[in-house]
Structures are given as structure tokens and as C-alpha cells.
Image (cartoon, rainbow, N blue to C red; front, side, top):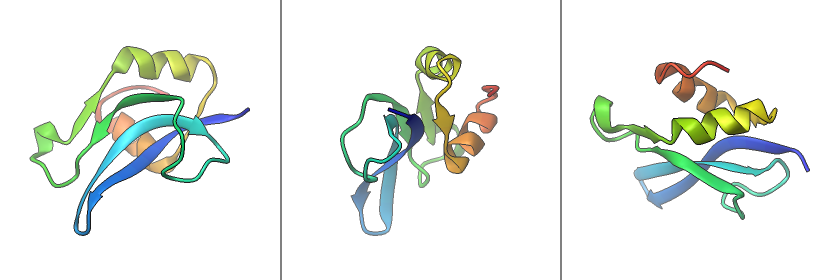
Length: 82
């Protein structure tokens, strides 16, 4: 199984928020997750947009998990090196 760190969409129309999760690469966007790592709420104030469990993220990255482009940008904003 190849896993990836990506976003899972929640919320209503024009009020989205996302959970940052580890999922099977072949699973649908809102499918079953392996582990939740945090959330991303793009509508909130800049300092409240992203909440991450950095230790969990680093653990998964050390295991060789792939990262989606959007999550890569979020991690770079939080100064987590890939």
C-alpha cells in the first residue's frame, strides 16, 4: 500500500475546511483515512488557519510517505522540511 498525506474536504458550500490526513493513494478524496494529522481552515485568520501535530507529520515523512502539492505548501508555511 502506498500512502500519501493529503487534504480531506469538509464543510458546506463556500465554507470549506480540510483535514490533513494520511490516506491510501488510491482512496477517494473523502474515503477512509489511516490517521488524521491536523486541519486547514482557509477562511480563518492567518494565525488560526493551520493546526498540525508536527511529531506525527515528521514520523510519517520519515516512513517515506508522499505529500500532495497543496499539503507541501502548507508544510512549507509551517517550516516543516520535507
